[in-house]
Length: 626
Image 1 (cartoon, rainbow, N blue to C red):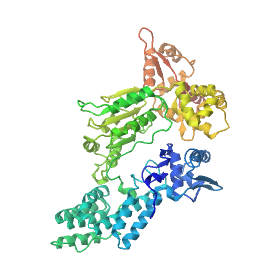
Image 2 (image 1 turned 90 degrees about the vertical axis):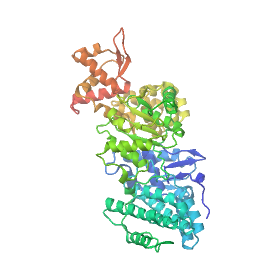
Image 3 (image 1 turned 60 degrees about the vertical axis):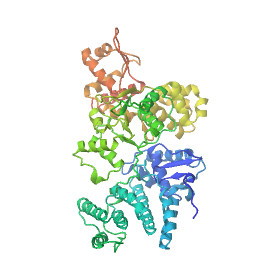
């Protein structure tokens, strides 16, 4: 049959979600836009109801702006991915949306066609054609289906179906190869499959048969013992009658073929979500997508890349760099951009973990280690239990030893959260982002990330909304950058708002921010919310530090000293200074001059001032706990 080549698949879902146009990667970076695209691809050429999309995106708790936000996502898909590039059309219907595309541009379609042809060839006693067709089908896979897409209650079953179809195709290809007498060649692959899918019985029985045919009956019997041990321990079940019969046949056969080769069984096996699929061979690639409009940051980017590229034969520890900065300054964006630029230096994989250190519930190191070990290919039964964090750490360090792996630990809380996750091999590299800085981690090279320049901010805004639109109002673009405090996240939120309101001028948006009663509202749009980033840091402050931050918003927008504020607070200078130190540590306050002969000076960032004033007003009104 004719089938599109991999390069002709504009939409790829058999692995990380990817969209290509003229060999250019145009995959959306925003998580929920990727989720909408994945849903539309799963239901391509069929109507998807609005209610289904909202349920998929937000579950039982959709925001009040769900419909408006969904419309923005659809607009972005049309503009940046589908309609604008001529890949198809996203139609609006009274009850929902319909993605109209050719089936042939989706890799899953060709997988289905090739798999069906392979099965037909197998049924027609043509194992050679079956093996060739099924191998082509399986070659379309690049990892677990829709990697990088958060699958909700509706999309998850589709992902499970894709993975089940992959296993069926793999089974049929193995059957065809066995009929062709390739049993010796299959043994290594089958051993890896039983390691990767420890509860999938069929791979064990084919491996037993292949070993026996290769004159290695004692190994075939050992495979059965392993199968029975895993099934009884993990499932409380014996292997299926077919597997037991194959075992008996091997025990009673002195030479030649066993009397029976176990067929696929209906005995209970783990579901797709319980099996923990991994690519074969296992090379984790967990870095989230890079931002296509990443802008500037030349100096800090060079510092991070220098750490990742450093080669030093005298090192005995992993290279490590820590990126710190205030909320919304672009720490994660810088990290991911540097990681993607240097990923070729880490051919054994890239691992990523969001440690949620700025929230009230940071992720436990043991949970992160379990995720890393799964990504490295360890089946669940080989990962030490939750109580054995030290053993998980030992297994992690053993696996990463002498491998060239990049580990990104995003939003770290403290050294105690980070230390168990560090590899012991100097061939690895670690990038840690944090608002406070994980003090106490030895060997870290610190990179302090400050605000963008006005020029960088204008360039970023132009990349988000279009250079011509920005250049037409260059003066007001610069005003917007200053109003956004030169924070990349705030600039992106303004750009997204301008995209959703194509008739707005930059001057109008600047006026809304300058005159609005709640200016931080203008820095919240779709998935971007600057206020939420401040909320997470503010929630971790003590009552005294919150009070200081709120009162700082009453000062003029200029530099100040401890003496200035201690008088306002009516507290001793040393108490005020201690509070300032804690606020500086979490980047809610900026130290502009360390002092020396003169007293140290401080400054409140524009958006920090807005946030602090909101908290002050709410505490006065009694709407928040003072």
